[in-house]
Length: 113
Image 1 (cartoon, rainbow, N blue to C red):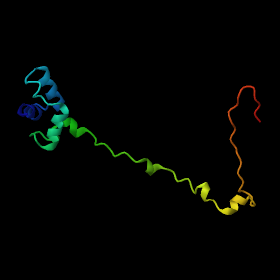
Image 2 (image 1 turned 120 degrees about the vertical axis):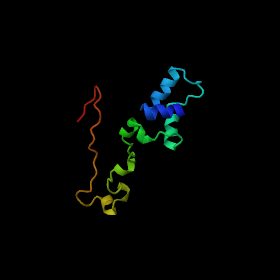
Image 3 (image 1 turned 90 degrees about the vertical axis):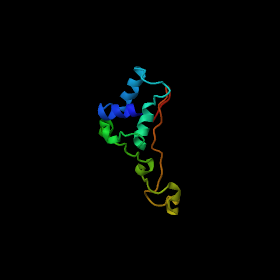
Image 4 (image 1 turned 30 degrees about the vertical axis):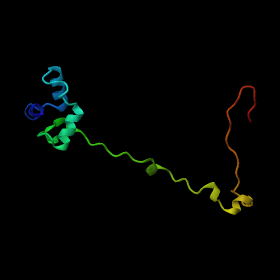
């Protein structure tokens, strides 16, 4: 951990470079070399002398924005057809008529009007 701190603070190496270099050069027993994620977690939790402000790459990253929930953008379409007034059901007034305006798919050999 001290070696990793030294490389990150003095030589300005990223945690990924520190882990990769240690593995390629076989500087330590492979069981002792932490993963890059573990190294970042140690930095975030304050176990190491290296802080986030010492890592140039981490400072330049933009924090993730919270995802919006689907309910925020859901359209309000008005009242339900089940909640329509009684006068609509009688169809006595002009404008309360219902018709089917959908034209179906044309099939071979059939006429569509």
